[in-house]
Structures are given as structure tokens and as C-alpha cells.
Length: 165
Image (cartoon, rainbow, N blue to C red; front, side, top):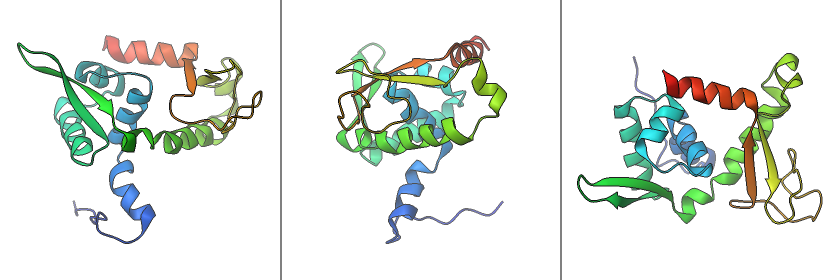
């Protein structure tokens, strides 16, 4: 299989961002980080990624300055993964992807019974923000840390089934 072109040195900003964020595994790890997941085993259970791929992507994200490792246990040494400011800035990208998918990626019968896969409320005022990038109640621009996500029953069941495997 031919190797894909490395875009890390292109002047094109879409190409450069796609070099890291265009990787499915990285997107799933970021999703979990935004939901507060910090540990390797939880990433593996939630994403279904194999340990080698997961370890590789975490190392890459650390090299790129998107996450940092922090020890939480000494014997044996175990780490948690935390978003840096650079990583937190990717929230808008994933939020836009989520909003697009909520509008366009589901068949009508998938949305009927449960509504959205994830319901977001604004932490400051409690408003359901729907697919907005500004709070419909107080008008604040929404960004990293401003939202509380609640998974639908369908998404929770899917995640639990994956963990049970």
C-alpha cells in the first residue's frame, strides 16, 4: 500500500492541521479528553483502538504539544493525559464536526427516539445550546470548558457494549 504524503511542512493550513487532526484515532482520543477521560485503559475501552495504535497516537500528540503526560502512580509508573492550551484550542474543531454530524450524518430514524447523540448545556446559565456556537440564552460565545455534555441513552448503550467486549 502506498504511503500517504506527509503534509507537516506544507504552507497550506488545512494540510498542516489535517496531518494531525485528520487521523481518526487522534479525533477519538480528543473526543474522550474533552469528556474528561485521562487514562490509557479508558481511552482503549472507549475508542476500541489497539494498544499499539493508541500508544503511538498519544506519543505523537504529546510530541505535537497537544497533550502532556502527568504521573498519577509511581509503582509502577502510570500516567494521565491532559490537554495543553494547544489541545484545548481543538475543541472548536471537534464541536464543529459534532454539529455537522448531528445535522447530516444520521438517518432520520436514528434521531427520532433519542434526539441528539450528545446534549450540551451551557455551564454558566444551564441553557441547552443545541448546535449553537453562542449560548441562545445569555449570548456568550461557547468554547472549551463552557459546556457540559450528556450522552443519549443510545450513545451510552453503545459505549457500554464496547467496554463489555
